[in-house]
Length: 356
Image 1: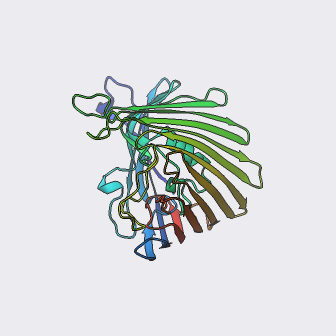
Image 2: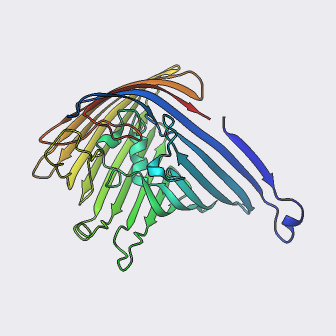
Image 3: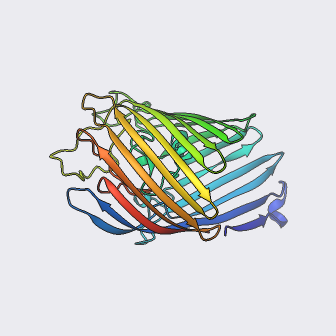
């Protein structure tokens, strides 16, 4: 259960200013699973992995009431590997998210490391929530290099106007002498009405290396939809990806033993159809994803995934999932999970997830 601490400014510290009340929440998630991966040149492997359905984490979030409907907000979220105790996201202290900002009747303005609107659109549509071995990130482009987050980000989230919410982001590349190199811009429009939710997301990232800057920026569009029929939920998305780094292989370690890794597509389309069938504490999840490579190499691929989740309580789940990718014409997509890129073209997992 989330632990909330209330703090009131008292005494001399309030002199000349309004006393503000703050709330700080400590929360987290621990995910552990046995994973069996197959189809790589090196052979099959069995692993005990952390963060298969969602990355294991501990976080701190808080608000301070500043009066007149205005609040200061912050969030610090650190990822870790429960199987080894190592830090996640390449060893960053708060690699999952780290931001501070203001929110009020105008919406929210947040500054720091944050999720991209385009990635959040993909997560909304994925019956696996961008996790399990059926993760959309195995094939669907998210912010070019399959990155879900942006550094140095200024994000604006509008208040809900009718059924619509707008989100905008911008981040400088911080390259001396070249304001365009590494610069990122994006946004989304979310429409929710009854059982229907639609979200359009866009992201543009200018390439920043000496060999790729100026070639063409990575431009990713996605239209995502979910419709709740009651007995089941139907999921769909369609994405358009153009430019250098608009789509890449999640695993760059050459898992299939090619003489050299093939270049990823600079012009591709992503399509996904999925379903979630909840019944009592149980839920079945399934999805199909197609990668349509429009480059001359025509490296298409298809992924099929099936999953099951059982809720022991509001905070504890048991789960199992299987996914397989059919790569065509030298494509090199691998079956990974929420935080791992995987080693081959198929994988199965069974595990437990606990939130607090």
